[in-house]
Length: 90
Image (cartoon, rainbow, N blue to C red):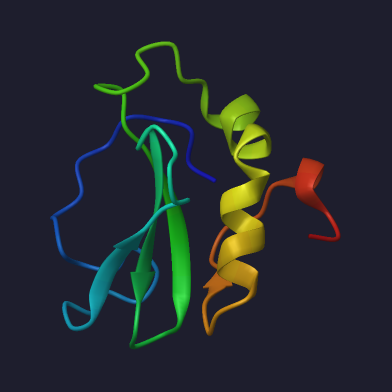
């Protein structure tokens, strides 16, 4: 979990560097403030928080608050590429 602002090239997996099969997943009916960027090459995902949708977003707290997104992703072929100790066991 980064928790910082940094520049990353769009449509490139931050986990493996692939540019093929990058997608965005979100909880249906949610605000769009959090999405999972998925990679078909490594089958990993990373949560993205959109400050334009939620200017008060805080990476650690919102990572836990968006547990529903992790649960949604767990049902598919993707695995979380980062670690949050508050989500141990999910």
